[in-house]
Length: 428
Ligand code: PLP
Image (tube, protein in one colour):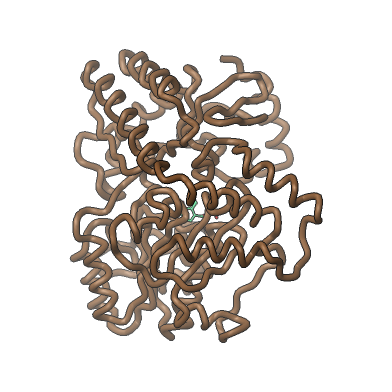
């Protein structure tokens, strides 16, 4: 493959944009090499500026559940654009998408739309703090909830500990209110709760993690968190920015039959436009301004183009009875094909999968949390990534990301992917 134009564009971008990108993972730092510049995309494919075609397993990091340039979404946005792009006034379509979302997701009465997953999680935490009148939160190592200060926290030493900032610019004062727990380790969470009695406002979790590869919760973990939260009047926040409207129409709450108190959305809910949302029961949501004292706002929140894209997306998902079954079948097919290809070549690996999320780890042991994800062989992953790219398969440029399966993928695309894995496996 030739990447001449991408290389030239990256060079030019680096002059005027920090690192040449508007979000760091796009820079390929974890895998080396020059990022490819996208020109267009349709269905399961993304095309770069050099004219290369890739089967896309990133799908804009999740939103494109139904494929790129999905006609109902494109048509809805084009039509809406002709009527004006933003008003800063309420619009009918905001209620329409809110009604549909509330009807699809269990256990929520009201939803507020924002512009990103980061904003959704940041606002959810503020709401939880305002509602409980407590300051501390628990998050899990390896879970990502966007880049607001409270979440850019690394584990300190010791089991019961305050977090420490993991980015300059995050203050110690902020970090002390975020406690770090191990994913899939209920006892660890219990210890934190016991050590901070009546101080914890919320536990926030990706109920299926997708930011350390794909890591489903072990049996009883989410149920255990629910019981712990009930016992200590702590709010349980499910960050379903990745999983919402993807792993089930109602997200992980529906899939695993565990209720959260606040749910955060992003990605799929915006159909590829900048949208996030957070939702809860009336009792909690009525604390938000203008009804209640917890402030939260946005000039472009509920933007008509974004709402049109999101509404078209949710309507398509809602109307498609077999969608989740099709997605899961494709993911399973890919899993089994890749496993066979890797086995044949005696490669050590672990593949995690649930619904339409899947990740390949070059690790010897089961990958169940951040530490076990970090044990994967990064050199092997880099070679795998570049091998896939050269064969026209675009997977996430980091071993700590999930792949997203889209409904637009055909079994031919999956076979092409499996053949590429088999080819690369010989060289790993
Ligand atoms: N929460 C989760 C689970 C995510 O995966 C992401 C982004 O990848 C976010 C929050 C932040 O969303 P955004 O990038 O839209 O701000």
